[in-house]
Every structure is written in C-alpha cells, then in structure tokens.
Image (cartoon, rainbow, N blue to C red; front, side, top):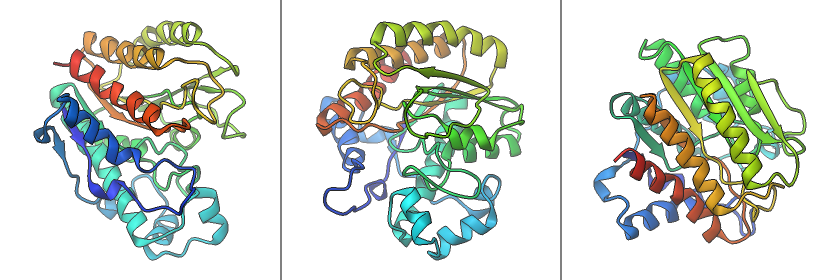
Length: 299
C-alpha cells in the first residue's frame, strides 16, 4: 500500500481559519504510531509539471496561480490567501494523486493523504480547491494511454461540481457524486450520476444507497481505474455536513467500496477530501479508518 505525503501538505493558515490543515500531519503520525503503516509505505511526490496541469486547466488561470495574480475575489472564493508555497503545495498534491493512480494500476490501491480537490474548475478554484487533482490524474492517464475508462466515486458530502463540469460530455471519465442536497455548492452541476441526500440521512439509509449504486456503476462504466474521494464530512459530528452517519458507518462505507472494487479487480486511487468536525480527533480517526480499511482489504 503506497501513501503520498509531504510536509508541504501542511500549509500555515491564520489563527481560527475554519480549514483543519493540521489533519494532514496528524493522519500519517497516527497510522505510524498504530503500526498500520511503516515509513516505507510513504513517498513524497515531486511537483507536477506544467504540461500535465494544462491538460485540464486553462493556461490563463494556471498563470494566475503561478505568478500570484489572483484577485481578492478569486482568493475569497478559494478560501486561502495566495502564495508561492500554496501553489507549490497544490501541484505536489496533484502529482501525488497521479503517482497513486499509477501505483494502483499495478498493485490495486494507493492513497493520497490530501487531495480530493473536486471544487476546482478549468478556469477557477473554489471551496479550498485550487486545481482538480482527480481530473488532472484522469486526463494524464488517458493522454498517456494508461487507461481507457475512469470512474470517479465522490462520497464527500459536498458535490464534486468542478469534476462534473470538467468531464461533462467526456465519456472516458464517469462522475458519480453522492452528496448533501442542501449543502455547498448551492449551485450544483450535473454529474453523470448524482444522488442528493436529504439533511439528517442516517447510516443505514446512506449505506443502502451506496450498496445499491456500486454494482450499477461498475456494470455501466466498466472502469479501468476508480478515483475514490473518501470525504469524512458525512459524519454526524461534522459542522457543515448535515448528515447523521456514525464513525462506524463511515468506516463501513470505505470497507464497502474497497471490498467491492477489490473483488472485481478494479484498481483504486484514493484522496481524503473534506472533514470539519469540531474535534480534530474525530476527523483524523475517520480519515485513518480509510487507511485501516485499505490495509485490511488489500493486504
């Protein structure tokens, strides 16, 4: 099991910022302490090259990120203040997702400690997302002819609006998003398949919907590779999620996805996505459960 992580993932933010940046450092530390992984499982990605970025994102937007010329409004929409270090962080995360995808094609699974930046569009970022790592990785693998068909399984509580827009009308990448109906983003894009969830959706209902969807997805798409966004903002403790999924239910979700894909011989590249519980321990433990489940199922 290969895991992408670099210290650059932990970007300094102002005191009181609502994004829980510390989780990126705490996740690998917890997994190492438990013995779920060893240092040999972790690799530090190199920064992504410009040509690969431009397979997905508009050159004008990339140049704004590169040269620090985003407007105040564009920065507010993203939620982070621009800096060279922030851009370097993003392109390192994106390369990590490409590397995880390539490894998964050979070995079944690989996980990025960050990533899942599904709110980024071709020409703009929003919702703490500057570049869309799944889109970049999918387009790279298609361009390199490493895959013919990809499937994005997006189980973050927020719709993968950027991914839906980027792949609208592109048959080689199928976008599936199961998300809060009344949650951010308030203007939803149209994925290839959306399952909007009502506020207060409980564990049993959530897992049943997913269990019903997975075989339909696989039969319909027949992917060479799945990109799995395992957001933990579905938790009942999440400040913004509005769902009632328990920590055990969140882990069962991951086990369900991994078991189904592993049984069907479909490689899986994973990114962590969002999580905004008040207690950061709840966020870290739920993310670590994703790694624990992968370690058990793909062992």
